[in-house]
Amino acid sequence: MSTPYREGEVEFNVPAAGKPCKTHYWICGDLSSGKTPLVTLHGGPGATHHYLTNHDELYRAHGIPIVFYDQIGNGASTHLPEKKGDGSFWTVQLFIDELNNLLGHLGIQEYDLLGHSWGGMLATSFAILQPKGLRRLVLASSPAKMEDWEKAAGGLKALLPKDVQEVLNKHEAAGTVESPEYQAASDRYNEEFTCRVKPMPEGFVKSFQAIAQDPTVYMTMNGPSEFFISGTLKSFDITADLYRIDVPTLLTNGKWDGAQG
Image: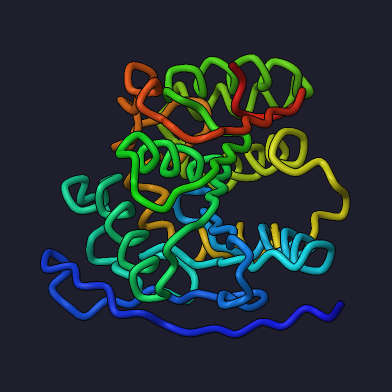
Protein backbone atom coordinates (compact mmCIF):
# COMPACT_ATOMS: atom_id res chain seq x y z
CA MET A 1 0.00 0.00 0.00
CA SER A 2 1.38 3.40 -0.95
CA THR A 3 1.45 6.20 1.62
CA PRO A 4 -0.69 9.15 0.49
CA TYR A 5 -0.10 12.39 2.36
CA ARG A 6 -1.88 15.68 2.16
CA GLU A 7 -1.11 18.79 4.14
CA GLY A 8 -2.78 22.02 5.06
CA GLU A 9 -3.09 24.84 7.55
CA VAL A 10 -5.81 25.85 9.96
CA GLU A 11 -6.17 29.30 11.47
CA PHE A 12 -5.71 29.31 15.24
CA ASN A 13 -7.04 32.39 16.97
CA VAL A 14 -4.79 33.35 19.89
CA PRO A 15 -5.61 36.93 20.97
CA ALA A 16 -2.54 37.16 23.20
CA ALA A 17 -0.28 36.40 20.22
CA GLY A 18 -0.93 39.81 18.71
CA LYS A 19 -0.86 38.41 15.18
CA PRO A 20 -2.62 35.72 13.10
CA CYS A 21 -1.55 32.18 13.94
CA LYS A 22 -1.81 28.95 11.98
CA THR A 23 -1.29 25.27 12.70
CA HIS A 24 0.29 23.22 9.91
CA TYR A 25 -0.84 19.60 9.63
CA TRP A 26 -0.23 16.50 7.55
CA ILE A 27 -2.69 13.66 7.04
CA CYS A 28 -1.61 10.20 5.99
CA GLY A 29 -4.58 8.30 4.57
CA ASP A 30 -8.26 9.13 4.26
CA LEU A 31 -10.18 10.59 7.20
CA SER A 32 -13.43 9.57 5.50
CA SER A 33 -12.44 5.89 5.29
CA GLY A 34 -14.54 4.92 8.31
CA LYS A 35 -11.47 3.89 10.33
CA THR A 36 -10.70 5.74 13.55
CA PRO A 37 -7.76 8.08 12.92
CA LEU A 38 -4.72 8.35 15.15
CA VAL A 39 -3.78 11.91 16.13
CA THR A 40 -0.14 12.32 17.16
CA LEU A 41 1.41 14.85 19.54
CA HIS A 42 5.15 15.45 19.23
CA GLY A 43 7.51 16.15 22.08
CA GLY A 44 9.98 18.86 22.91
CA PRO A 45 8.32 21.05 23.82
CA GLY A 46 9.49 22.80 20.70
CA ALA A 47 10.20 19.86 18.41
CA THR A 48 8.26 18.96 15.25
CA HIS A 49 6.23 16.08 13.88
CA HIS A 50 9.03 14.69 11.72
CA TYR A 51 10.35 12.02 14.08
CA LEU A 52 6.85 10.54 14.49
CA THR A 53 6.20 9.96 10.79
CA ASN A 54 7.28 6.32 11.00
CA HIS A 55 3.84 5.78 12.50
CA ASP A 56 2.54 5.95 8.95
CA GLU A 57 3.30 2.23 8.94
CA LEU A 58 -0.08 1.91 10.68
CA TYR A 59 -1.67 3.20 7.51
CA ARG A 60 0.32 0.91 5.25
CA ALA A 61 -0.39 -2.14 7.40
CA HIS A 62 -3.93 -1.45 8.58
CA GLY A 63 -5.32 1.52 6.65
CA ILE A 64 -5.47 3.67 9.81
CA PRO A 65 -5.42 7.41 8.97
CA ILE A 66 -2.73 9.34 10.85
CA VAL A 67 -2.76 13.05 11.68
CA PHE A 68 0.56 14.80 12.31
CA TYR A 69 0.99 18.49 13.08
CA ASP A 70 3.58 20.96 14.26
CA GLN A 71 2.44 22.62 17.45
CA ILE A 72 2.27 26.40 17.56
CA GLY A 73 5.71 27.98 17.80
CA ASN A 74 7.32 25.04 16.02
CA GLY A 75 8.23 23.80 12.55
CA ALA A 76 5.84 24.86 9.80
CA SER A 77 3.32 26.43 12.20
CA THR A 78 3.40 30.07 13.33
CA HIS A 79 6.53 31.07 15.23
CA LEU A 80 6.45 33.62 18.02
CA PRO A 81 10.06 34.34 19.03
CA GLU A 82 8.89 37.58 20.58
CA LYS A 83 7.15 35.45 23.23
CA LYS A 84 10.35 33.78 24.42
CA GLY A 85 10.35 33.73 28.21
CA ASP A 86 6.64 34.58 28.45
CA GLY A 87 5.36 31.84 30.74
CA SER A 88 1.87 33.32 30.77
CA PHE A 89 1.63 32.68 27.02
CA TRP A 90 3.23 29.25 26.64
CA THR A 91 0.83 27.23 28.77
CA VAL A 92 -0.48 23.68 28.52
CA GLN A 93 -3.92 25.18 27.93
CA LEU A 94 -2.65 26.93 24.78
CA PHE A 95 -1.78 23.56 23.26
CA ILE A 96 -5.05 21.98 24.40
CA ASP A 97 -6.90 24.79 22.65
CA GLU A 98 -4.82 24.22 19.52
CA LEU A 99 -5.61 20.50 19.49
CA ASN A 100 -9.34 21.16 19.89
CA ASN A 101 -9.16 23.73 17.10
CA LEU A 102 -7.45 21.27 14.76
CA LEU A 103 -9.90 18.45 15.50
CA GLY A 104 -12.80 20.79 14.81
CA HIS A 105 -11.31 22.03 11.56
CA LEU A 106 -10.71 18.50 10.30
CA GLY A 107 -14.18 17.39 11.36
CA ILE A 108 -12.81 14.50 13.41
CA GLN A 109 -15.56 13.10 15.63
CA GLU A 110 -13.81 9.99 17.02
CA TYR A 111 -10.07 9.50 17.32
CA ASP A 112 -7.23 7.80 19.13
CA LEU A 113 -4.49 9.99 20.59
CA LEU A 114 -0.77 9.28 20.85
CA GLY A 115 1.56 11.59 22.75
CA HIS A 116 5.32 11.17 23.08
CA SER A 117 7.40 12.78 25.84
CA TRP A 118 6.04 16.34 26.21
CA GLY A 119 3.34 15.25 23.78
CA GLY A 120 2.30 12.64 26.34
CA MET A 121 2.07 15.30 29.02
CA LEU A 122 -0.17 17.28 26.69
CA ALA A 123 -2.21 14.18 25.83
CA THR A 124 -2.70 13.39 29.52
CA SER A 125 -3.74 16.96 30.28
CA PHE A 126 -6.22 16.71 27.41
CA ALA A 127 -7.55 13.27 28.39
CA ILE A 128 -8.36 14.16 31.99
CA LEU A 129 -10.90 16.63 30.59
CA GLN A 130 -12.74 13.59 29.18
CA PRO A 131 -13.14 15.12 25.70
CA LYS A 132 -15.96 13.81 23.57
CA GLY A 133 -14.66 11.61 20.78
CA LEU A 134 -11.46 10.39 22.43
CA ARG A 135 -11.52 6.62 22.09
CA ARG A 136 -8.10 5.38 23.14
CA LEU A 137 -4.90 6.93 24.50
CA VAL A 138 -1.22 6.03 24.04
CA LEU A 139 1.40 7.68 26.26
CA ALA A 140 4.95 7.00 25.09
CA SER A 141 8.00 7.79 27.23
CA SER A 142 6.16 10.51 29.09
CA PRO A 143 6.25 11.64 32.75
CA ALA A 144 3.22 12.37 34.90
CA LYS A 145 5.29 14.87 36.86
CA MET A 146 8.52 16.66 36.06
CA GLU A 147 10.11 15.76 39.38
CA ASP A 148 10.24 12.16 38.14
CA TRP A 149 11.79 13.30 34.86
CA GLU A 150 14.56 15.15 36.69
CA LYS A 151 15.28 12.16 38.94
CA ALA A 152 15.45 9.83 35.94
CA ALA A 153 17.70 12.20 34.00
CA GLY A 154 20.07 12.43 36.95
CA GLY A 155 20.29 8.66 37.16
CA LEU A 156 20.91 8.28 33.45
CA LYS A 157 23.51 11.05 33.47
CA ALA A 158 25.49 8.97 35.96
CA LEU A 159 25.81 6.28 33.27
CA LEU A 160 27.59 8.61 30.84
CA PRO A 161 31.39 8.63 30.53
CA LYS A 162 33.03 10.51 33.38
CA ASP A 163 34.42 13.26 31.16
CA VAL A 164 30.95 13.98 29.76
CA GLN A 165 29.49 14.07 33.28
CA GLU A 166 32.21 16.48 34.37
CA VAL A 167 31.37 18.90 31.55
CA LEU A 168 27.66 18.77 32.38
CA ASN A 169 28.24 19.22 36.12
CA LYS A 170 30.76 22.03 35.60
CA HIS A 171 28.42 24.15 33.53
CA GLU A 172 25.37 23.40 35.68
CA ALA A 173 27.29 24.60 38.75
CA ALA A 174 28.50 27.70 36.91
CA GLY A 175 25.12 28.51 35.38
CA THR A 176 26.56 28.33 31.86
CA VAL A 177 24.29 25.62 30.48
CA GLU A 178 23.75 27.51 27.22
CA SER A 179 27.44 27.18 26.32
CA PRO A 180 28.41 25.17 23.22
CA GLU A 181 30.44 22.77 25.36
CA TYR A 182 27.45 21.99 27.55
CA GLN A 183 25.16 21.56 24.57
CA ALA A 184 27.65 19.16 22.96
CA ALA A 185 27.68 17.09 26.15
CA SER A 186 23.87 17.18 26.16
CA ASP A 187 23.93 15.86 22.60
CA ARG A 188 25.93 12.90 23.90
CA TYR A 189 23.16 12.28 26.44
CA ASN A 190 20.55 12.43 23.68
CA GLU A 191 22.50 9.86 21.67
CA GLU A 192 22.26 7.44 24.59
CA PHE A 193 18.86 8.17 26.10
CA THR A 194 16.72 9.97 23.52
CA CYS A 195 17.50 8.11 20.29
CA ARG A 196 20.02 5.27 20.43
CA VAL A 197 19.81 4.47 16.72
CA LYS A 198 23.04 5.35 14.91
CA PRO A 199 23.11 7.20 12.68
CA MET A 200 20.18 9.14 14.06
CA PRO A 201 17.15 8.84 11.73
CA GLU A 202 16.44 11.83 9.53
CA GLY A 203 13.17 12.59 11.32
CA PHE A 204 14.95 12.95 14.66
CA VAL A 205 17.64 15.12 13.10
CA LYS A 206 15.01 17.45 11.65
CA SER A 207 13.14 17.69 14.95
CA PHE A 208 16.30 18.46 16.93
CA GLN A 209 17.31 21.04 14.32
CA ALA A 210 13.93 22.71 14.71
CA ILE A 211 14.55 23.27 18.42
CA ALA A 212 18.00 24.70 17.69
CA GLN A 213 16.68 27.02 14.99
CA ASP A 214 13.93 28.44 17.21
CA PRO A 215 14.28 27.53 20.90
CA THR A 216 11.45 29.82 22.01
CA VAL A 217 9.07 27.12 23.21
CA TYR A 218 11.72 24.77 24.56
CA MET A 219 13.57 27.43 26.52
CA THR A 220 10.38 28.91 27.97
CA MET A 221 8.65 25.69 28.97
CA ASN A 222 11.61 23.40 29.67
CA GLY A 223 14.74 25.51 29.98
CA PRO A 224 18.22 24.82 28.58
CA SER A 225 18.81 21.54 30.41
CA GLU A 226 17.17 18.10 30.56
CA PHE A 227 18.65 17.53 34.03
CA PHE A 228 16.97 20.36 35.87
CA ILE A 229 13.82 21.95 34.53
CA SER A 230 13.76 25.73 34.91
CA GLY A 231 10.86 26.53 32.59
CA THR A 232 7.13 26.67 33.18
CA LEU A 233 6.80 22.87 33.17
CA LYS A 234 8.98 22.57 36.28
CA SER A 235 5.90 22.30 38.52
CA PHE A 236 3.98 19.99 36.16
CA ASP A 237 2.34 17.22 38.20
CA ILE A 238 -0.84 15.62 36.95
CA THR A 239 -0.74 12.50 39.12
CA ALA A 240 -3.71 13.55 41.28
CA ASP A 241 -5.94 13.79 38.20
CA LEU A 242 -4.99 10.60 36.39
CA TYR A 243 -8.11 8.86 37.68
CA ARG A 244 -10.13 11.14 35.41
CA ILE A 245 -8.87 9.38 32.29
CA ASP A 246 -11.84 7.29 31.21
CA VAL A 247 -10.56 5.61 28.03
CA PRO A 248 -8.33 2.55 27.52
CA THR A 249 -4.74 3.75 27.87
CA LEU A 250 -1.45 2.17 26.81
CA LEU A 251 1.76 3.28 28.52
CA THR A 252 5.11 2.51 26.89
CA ASN A 253 8.47 2.97 28.57
CA GLY A 254 11.91 1.68 27.60
CA LYS A 255 14.91 0.79 29.74
CA TRP A 256 16.90 3.77 28.49
CA ASP A 257 14.06 6.29 28.29
CA GLY A 258 14.45 9.70 29.83
CA ALA A 259 10.99 9.21 31.35
CA GLN A 260 11.16 6.61 34.11
CA GLY A 261 8.42 5.65 36.56
